[in-house]
Image (cartoon, rainbow, N blue to C red):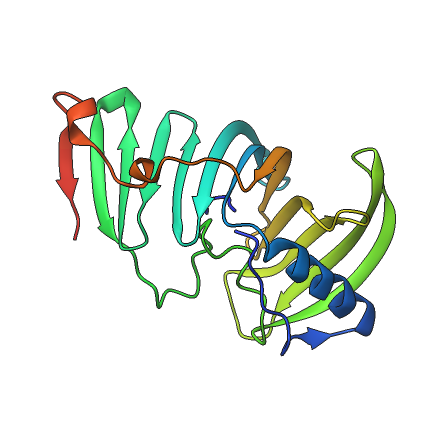
Length: 208
């Protein structure tokens, strides 16, 4: 799973308690003004039973269904139709088609556009995190998924996302903590296509 990352949501048909729906509606109204965004984040994967704890820093740029993700020696580029995954250590490029009908994968382009009538929302609590007041909301899939909930931490003043955590059914937790968020910035559209000339000698594995 990858960050993620867009914030254009549609919650009008969402099932859940009144408070969580009100918060998510305000989140939607705020986020709809963003034409794009960039973010610095930390990805954490933990599994207590398996004694696993990993942490990696990353950066992402998102515009619509296009994104560029840099994390842990990998660069993932998608123009909404094709996804290029470049692995720096072995100078290898993997090419895949984007499967728009894949409801299981949470890509940056849909991680925060995914919460519609397929989810039930639940207000967990209001507390103080990241130096501000926040709302903690759980999104629970109505149909069976490999994960059983996604927890959002939303700023109570700005209605921007601070972090979200995916709770997998195998006991793993995948968390994304956003350190720096910049909406409506200047993004060169050419970054959303892989330029082979910048990677001499790259070994291409086309999986399409």
